[in-house]
Length: 477
Image (cartoon, rainbow, N blue to C red):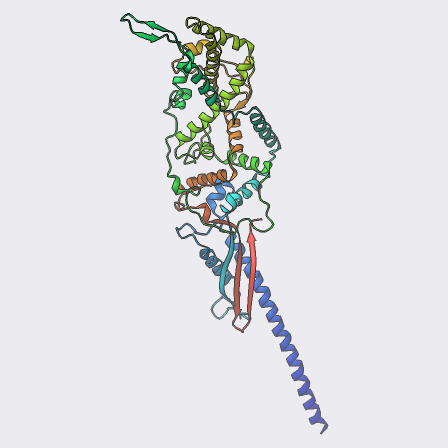
């Protein structure tokens, strides 16, 4: 009787112990399923980021994944499928044969969905810009930041960007044209106005000419590259993502803008410093001008540079008593026959404007040859004389390189700094697309198909009836 009671008691105890043990084992399995799901999700999402675009990293030191994977199919589902495959391959128990390990979890991916992507062109290109700035922060650029701020500030203070020198010159010419000139008879008795023979007219007659011909002379070495603007990101409809990832700072300070400009000068070419790898040779000029050819971009930059130099030279000339006296003496000589005293002041001003333009052409010619020109000149820096205006036929005097002041690159830095930030970002990505499309397997490359962080939602289940969802955000930060 006692032996039978002991057996029943032991049976009841063992059933309770066995239930407890099985509960613990099942709880452990659920915990391991959750842990493995998290680990495999981490591995899979990191594996997706390991597929960064090699050429983009090689040429521009940017880490982005191309969701098209070299095809024309740009969609997030491609990345979601890559993520699913990476996770499936990392679940345990995938071995086969008699030596395969027993899979006590039997996990599989039901679905993976990319909820958000931070695309390079989002926020007006600031996603790309943020990475470029982070790259440049590893270098010491404090001196360049201070220098650019100082130079741009000086240019603005003198009003070189905003002063309408062309309108001022035209106003003077209009007043000269309104003056009633004396008439004289020719041999046939016909009356005609006495010619003023103002040398400024010869200079002004060439203002409409192709300025590159004036300052370069030989055009054979100028790049003839032409693009189709609608093929690139700044002009086409582009894919949109979620913008900067949560917690990322918008790159909008003055230092940010200048660091990005330093990045562009580090990675791109310009006139006199062309890169062999580049499709367009004058890439910095393209980011400033945005035209479809190297020739047009260089010409547009040169015209702006001449406008700056002309404004600076006009300011100097009107402050130099000696040069003003020279111009006035010539004006008196020209108007003496006409006997119109009021005309002297106008002709003097027209001569000074023509003189400033001549000097500006000489300045730009010097800059394009690798010389330096100070933003505001002194008497020691002045190169041309009134004789150059009187004999002007389109040949620009070389003059002497002062050896100090700003280089062509320095003037480009100021122009780039003054450029609209979003427009500059987009044109920079145009350049990236142009260069990368020339490399093997990248003919369809698009910057708006590239992302640097993403939010994924993954659903997994076990053959034993358990289910779990994981949501994670991964990026290169």
